[in-house]
Each structure stands twice: as C-alpha cells, then as structure tokens.
Image 1 (cartoon, rainbow, N blue to C red):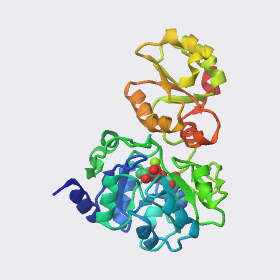
Image 2 (cartoon, rainbow, N blue to C red; image 1 turned 60 degrees about the vertical axis):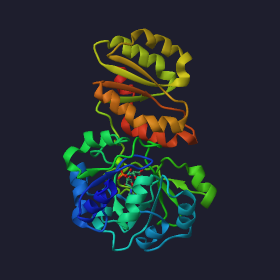
Image 3 (cartoon, protein in one colour; image 1 turned 60 degrees about the horizontal axis):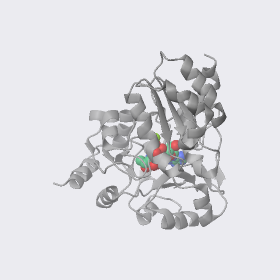
Image 4 (tube, rainbow, N blue to C red; image 1 turned 30 degrees about the vertical axis):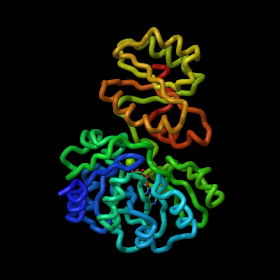
Length: 338
Ligand code: TXA
Ligand code: MG
C-alpha cells in the first residue's frame, strides 16, 4: 500500500493524519465524525471553543458543505484555490459541531500541496485540520517538527518536505454582510480586495467578556518557549545595552537584515557568543514568513531563554508577520528596566 492509501484508510477509520500544506503542517481528521475530531482537540490540548479549518480538494467539494456559497466565495476560490485562503461560510449539518466549536459557520480551504490535494481527492470528503502543533505553540513547517510536537498522538505523518509559505492562511469571514479578515495570513488584504472590493480587518482582541468572531485569535499564541519581547528599530541600542548587562543570560536578538548599519548593531556585535546570538532576518516579507517558525524553534532548541525580536515596518505587506510576532512576544518596556 502506498503512503497516500495508508493515510486515506486511517482517516476513514477515524484516525489522525498529519499532512503538509503550503502554509504549515495540519493535523487532520474526518470532519463528519465527532469522535475523530475530538481526537484532534485531545492531541493538541486545544480548547474545544476554538473552531477548526476544514480542508477540501476544490470548490465543488466545498459547496457540498456550505449551506450558502456567496458569490464572493465563488470568485475567491476560483482565483486563489488551491492556496492560503480560508473562507468562513454557513455550514451544513454534515460538518459535526465539534469541528466548528458549535458555530453555525465553517472555515473551508483547499491547500496548495500536491500530496495533500491527492489525499483530499482520494478521501473525497472534508478533513478538519488545525496546525499540527500543541495548542499555543509555534506551528510546524516540517514533518520533523510535527513529530517533535505530537509524537505518538498522531497515527500517521505524510512527509511533503518543508512548507513553501511558512505562515498560516488568511481567514476571511463571508458569513456576514461585509467580508472581514479574521486572521491576516499569506494572502494579503490587497489581493482579496482586487477580486471582491473592500474588506474589513477585524482588530478586536479576544477577551473573556465578549464572544470573539474568530475564537482562535487569543493575544498570546504561536509562542516560543523563550521569554520573548518585541522592539522597534529605534530601540535597538537599548536592547544592545540590556544584552551587555546580561552576559549571564542566554539571549538572542532577531533583527532585520537592513539594520546592519544601525548603531545598536555595532554595540551588539562584540557581545556575540554561543550563548548570545544575533539572527538577521530577511527584509522580504515572504521570505521572512517562510523562515519565522523554524527560526523560533531552532532558538528554543538551543536553549535561548530571552529573545528580542525587532518588528518589521508597519506596512501592508508585513501585516501577517507582525500579527504572529505580536502574539509571540510581549512589549519590550517591561524587560528593559530589569
Ligand atoms: O494555514 C492554515 O490555515 C493552517 C493549515 C493547516 O491549513 N491551519 C491553521 O489552523 O492555521 P488553526 O486551527 O491553527 O487556525 C484556524 C483559525 C483560528 O484562528 C480559528 O479561530 C479560525 O481559523 N476559524 C476556523 N473556523 C472558523 C469559523 N467558523 N469562524 C471563525 N473563525 C474560524
Ligand atoms: Mg494554529
């Protein structure tokens, strides 16, 4: 039996299959089976209030599970699927409520990876799959990461190499009158607007008192094990000063490549050692996204205990990366003074 046949059989029996996508690896189960979906939540330690994305082979399969398929959904799926765009639409009863945290809507997406598209075609049904990491941890971008995160909790891992995009899909809510981005991602707001006109950006923070439209968007998410703090380019000299005063701490600074001539960089360079690292991140948003999670993981593996992360500029192409970095870090102020 080939790998795919094995994976399909496991899904059909209610098991868990991790698979590659262009964004990050997913942890999949049959979205029409409550017990299969339940196993995802257990394996991840994920709160049952956080709905899962349901993966499909193409638009025609998506329509089977949408109670209503808005015109915008048709336009966008034809333009961007397979690809890093999740469309939230009213769901049919075939998708079990456990998959959508009881919501009346479902997030549907067709992922752009040949192996997984073939898996979805052969399975010929909807596959619920969050990112294949333990809840609140950094998403996996290689099969090795999935293995480290989930070990025996997953029945089968399909290895499709490192993820090409590296950052999760854009989640777009089409279930209300105005289309709204619930989670910025690999596909930009501008790309979506070019197809369907103005879309809003949901910028609320999920607090306990009001129900969030996208319950997975807690402020702290995607976090490395290290204590992580974010800073702006103007603060690099202060970060370097903190680093000089804390030679006993294992720290790392993630700065933008373009800061090589920043004065703070000159202060930092003489401090570097095995315990004190500087990582220069690409000035290109796509390349940055591709490398981000693997970089955070590698620093964790090296035992870094304090991580300083420079935020890239506040411009549209950096929206998704800034979103992830902001969730993975705390503001620098608190740490600077200690
Ligand atoms: O790129 C991706 O989207 C990856 C790959 C595996 O496809 N998946 C992923 O899934 O990132 P997950 O579970 O880690 O994130 C799903 C996000 C959460 O923020 C969740 O709240 C939101 O999508 N979401 C899913 N269904 C929703 C719904 N019906 N209404 C609102 N938000 C929804
Ligand atoms: Mg996730």
